[in-house]
Image 1 (cartoon, one colour):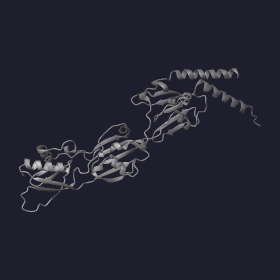
Image 2 (cartoon, rainbow, N blue to C red):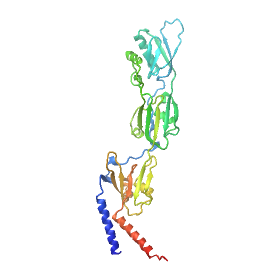
Image 3 (cartoon, rainbow, N blue to C red):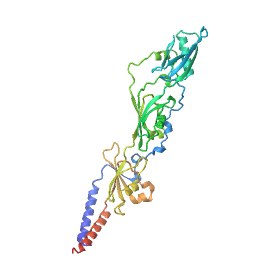
Image 4 (tube, rainbow, N blue to C red):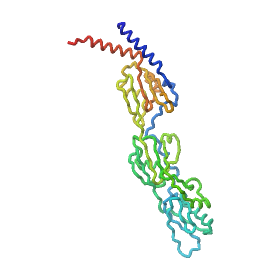
Length: 364
């Protein structure tokens, strides 16, 4: 090698070392010492999410609800004529009109509980002394639920009240699509909850007050966000659906990584839904390294709340030897196979060899 070539290589190497010495800002870690809060989270596969948690536990098909039709019979024992049962529809506020007794709140009650409530109010209001009340649910109102987004068959579905929950809606829509993400939004048409739907049903004057109450302002739709990843880890919530509710299953946001530097096919690559991509996978997607001695890799990662990006130093040889060193990549990561004095020297030598060969080739 000539003195001129050696001097050029040394000069370029010095420039690289000087340039890289002053460009390290922000957070810099080696892959082995990367804190847990900066590590990528493994993807959740669609078919591994436990959707059973979206069902309403202990749902009962005999619970009375708005728009249900019930058959009501009240007997005192002193009737001179045959008692004719009364067919009554439950109002939107959860009450029924009982002859002589007035409005009685029955929504959220079992038929036996509704009979007890009517009996108590009839006695309390001085209408009967000891009536015999029988109530039978003749027809239950179904809920119309709209399911849209990343599901197999988006449409409007009719759900029985007993299974009117998020699980039932997704099942009717054929399940989540392959590109479905973990986020679901429920737009509830009416967030109003009658006290009888939770805990002990109202009795006596409390029920009387409830039955006579009419809200001045109609309830506004309320949006509820559901994260299936958190639910799979044990988060609980209220996943019941009412008439007119809308379920939106959001598709998975595109997850991409960028590979650059000493690789054969630098570019942007998409991570398939539910799949994980590690460092060696990214290098394979980019056609491998241009030089096998190019061992130094930097992964630049944007961290929420940090103005400067996080820089993670990774060794290809360590990643091959130890699975734990094969860094799990996150969406948006930039993987750069770095130039080093060694790789630069080898590239220069290759360039000069090619130049020398072409220079000795006769033009004619």
